[in-house]
Length: 346
Image (cartoon, rainbow, N blue to C red; front, side, top):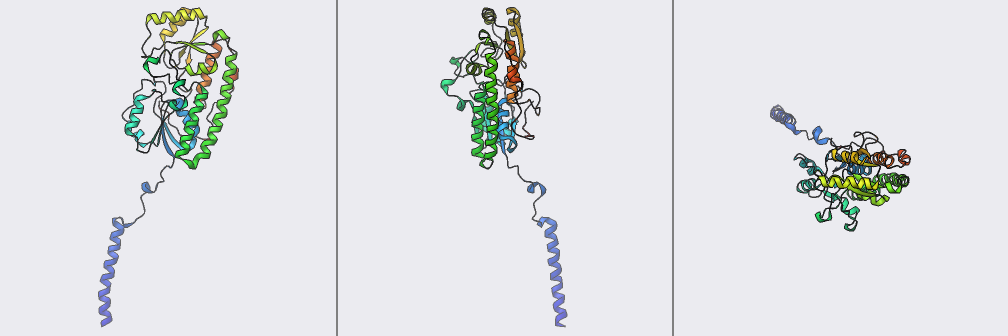
């Protein structure tokens, strides 16, 4: 009788325990994480950059080991570009924000400073690539304004300085991938050296009296200084308005007096004024140059910083009476293999 009584008391207890366990499981007692929670976080650095030449230099060094997005659309005036409020979220997610600097992207810099994470790094390249003594002031960037010409990248030697600065910062932030970043830098350096030598070769083929540039936008100051050319003027004034009638007349006379064979416009920003100057001076009007609009489309082999340089030189040199063949055969593709997934805004 005693054993039967004991069993009758134990059984309800066991049933109650079993029901409790079922309830716990049904209510989420399973401690395994949801698919969203178990999904591995992308370990790559999140990098945000501005103008496309800078974005592509970052892409070449970071390659597949970074998550990269540019914010300044190609074909817009980077001096007057105003970032959209939605970019604040992108800035807030970034580990590294890379700008050209030298006052080129002030609104974007302000947005980055006010929205970045406390430990995120803002890398402003221009201020480190050249010293204030090397700043260039000219037609669109007068010294009285205090803002130097920020277009360093048309000189590929300064483009290489950008790459070195980017490499150094990536290594500090992601030392596990230091060897990968360093390999990409050395491959990129080799391509830049070839580009530099080719530019020197093709400039030498231009008659000395023709080594002068009249352009739409004032972006060739550092290039000209590096390669023994002279920028005689830029049609776009410092406030990015149309030049005055007097300024146009002076430029026409200057082109005539110098006997220049061509003047250079932009493939992105049409310039009826520059075309009129060419017509009045009876010289060729070349409107194929680009400052920061990479050739082709994102993903195309030529959609690179070095592709931009190649396109500009193959348009410029023959128009000035030289031979650009040393540029034509250069390999201007990215240095790494595979699809990086870098985002270039359109």
